[in-house]
Image 1 (tube, rainbow, N blue to C red):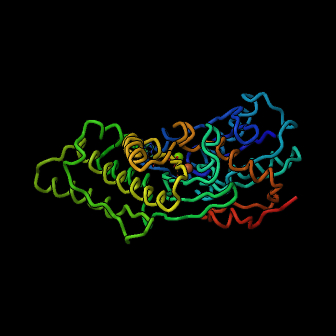
Image 2: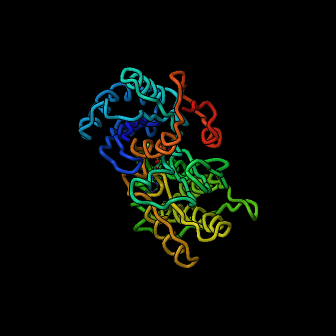
Image 3: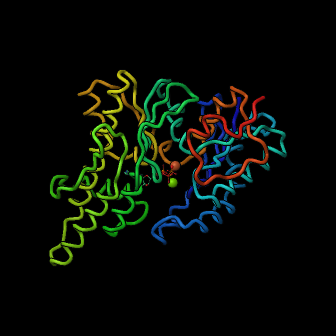
Amino acid sequence: GLILAVETSCDETAAAVVEGGTRIRSNIVSSQIAIHRRFGGVVPEVASRGHVEQITAVMAAALEDAGVHPQDLAAVAVTYGPGLVGALLVGLMAAKTFAWVHGLPLIGVHHIVGHLFAHRLAGGPEPPWLALVVSGGHTELIYIPNDHTFEVLGRTRDDAAGEAFDKTARALGLPYPGGPQIDALASSGDPERYPLPRSWLEEESLDFSFSGLKTAVLNLLNDARQRGDGVRPEDVAASFQAAVVEVLVEKTVRAVRRYPGVPVVVAGGVAANSALRRVMDRRAEEEGFLWSAPPLALCTDNAAMIAAAAWPRLSRGWFHGMDLNARANLGLEAWAAGTGWRRS
Ligand code: ATP
Ligand code: FE
Ligand code: MG
């Protein structure tokens, strides 16, 4: 079966056609990064307008690239949360209209489940597996015993990992999005130059907290400014990155100890981080577990991952009605449990 998927939860307007939940036939991503860079971050109103301008052409391009006609499709999948509600609505309306006009079933997808399933498009592991989701809005450790069950073992209590990267980059005067900028700058920096706090929380906790680290960086920069002696931005970037990565990796190791022998997949935009990949390589070898991450283009927002996530629901005959609404704070467990689904 072929699924046409649509994704507009943040600042990427994306559409894709995927066959059998794993084979990418087309994957179109129109990014608004250049537009939002002027404002130092994503402006919701600007994002919605950008989606309105792009969505029709992006969907048409996905079908054309795949060489697929609407009558060849088995379903239309669309992200309906979590995300910016105005942005989500644009993709949802476009997907609903398309499904209605062509008489296709509609499958509403949770954005993070999309990130979780991205690796299926690149030959990633079958269940059971563990996921470390590190994106602009999420930091979560999730155990996935099967394609329909998602047990959240830990999540951030404040900032997401990507958010911490973006805010720290901003404090260093780097353009949005800051993650790749910090990554590049850190490559010529000393990660031990500035001792920054690691927030481990309670002994057994798999939760995360990055706001203390962000504050520590801000204080470091302010103190240096007041003393009139500068900091080496490369060293700040490297020290900050080392602190984030150490906590992400060690919490993942703790999770693996609870589920021995289960492979780990790192998903979301921060999975592109070179230090994270390096430290995961080392710790996985020491601890004896397997880990992987999807190719970079599938780590950041795209619609192919939304089709991959929709596939197990299509196989089960789980659909949504045309009354499906955008949900800015859609919960993972509620989505997986089938709340609001129709079964055929
Ligand atoms: P969410 O999926 O939680 O709604 P999002 O879709 O905006 O958020 P992604 O597109 O998955 O998030 O990832 C974007 C984030 O990844 C940004 O915060 C960006 O700075 C970060 N990022 C991208 N590349 C790197 C890198 N090399 N190192 C660190 N962070 C990175
Ligand atoms: Fe995302
Ligand atoms: Mg994004």
